[in-house]
Each structure stands twice: as structure tokens, then as C-alpha cells.
Length: 190
Image (cartoon, rainbow, N blue to C red):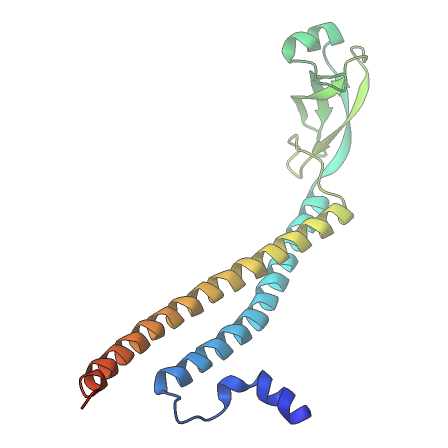
């Protein structure tokens, strides 16, 4: 039973008087293709996930929350930008960077705030407004998804290359069959 199972699994590698050189080359292409897909895809996915995770960690280290003061009243803020679904408007705020310099900018604030209200804003290392960095959980999920995408893309490219090689071998095989058919077909009926 075991020998039959091994024979079914490795039928491509069994010797046969009908096996040609292109069949052996095709077997090697298939083997190398799947090994490269497995190992290279895992490596591409791991490297991508690590790079994305490191990038997100740098973002979390570079960005921080600081307190800002709303410079304009909500009525004035409504004129600056449109209200969104959650009752936020674009409002002008002022904050002091870690080096002591004062900055102003426009951020989304709650439409019910009054001039002078304090709001939290995210700033980068240079004191410029920025968005909140992704949480550790969100960064892990996104890094994993991008790593999986890289592995799939790498595997797809390798698979397409292998199929292209096999297509070339099939063309060669069909040409050989055609030449042999022409050679042997003329002797039939004699």
C-alpha cells in the first residue's frame, strides 16, 4: 500500500521508455517552482511584515498627543469647513511645540466647543500636525495582511514564470510529436 502511495505521489520521477528529455526538464521546473514559492513566499512575507511593523513602530515613537487651544468659535469653525456625520467641524487651533515655538493649524473638532477650549492634537517630532499613528493591534493586523499579500504576489509571479517555462516546453513537445508523426505517418499502410 505504501509503495503504491509513493508511486502515485512521485509518478513524474519514475523512469519510463516514453519519457523524453523535455519531460525531465518539466519535472525539474515544477519542483523548483514549488520550492521557490514556498521558501521565497515565506521569506517575502516575513520581510515585508517586519518592515511594515518597524515603520509603524517608528510612527508611534515619532508622533505624540499635545494640548491645543481652539482659536475660533464653532460658528466661525463652521465657515472654515463642512460638518461631517459625527458633528465634527474643521477648526483652527494653536499649540506650543516641545521647542517652545507656537504653531497653528486646522483639525477636526467637536462642533459644540467654544473658543478657548482645549483639544488634543497629534503632532510629529517637528511639531507639525499629523494623524494618529495606528495602534499596536492595528499595526500588527496591517503588517500581517501586507506580508501575506507580498507572499501571494511573489508566489503568483513565480508560478506565472513556471507556467511560461512549461508553455515553452509544451510547444517544443508538440513540435517533436508533429515531426515524429510526419516521419512515422508516411510508413503506415505499407
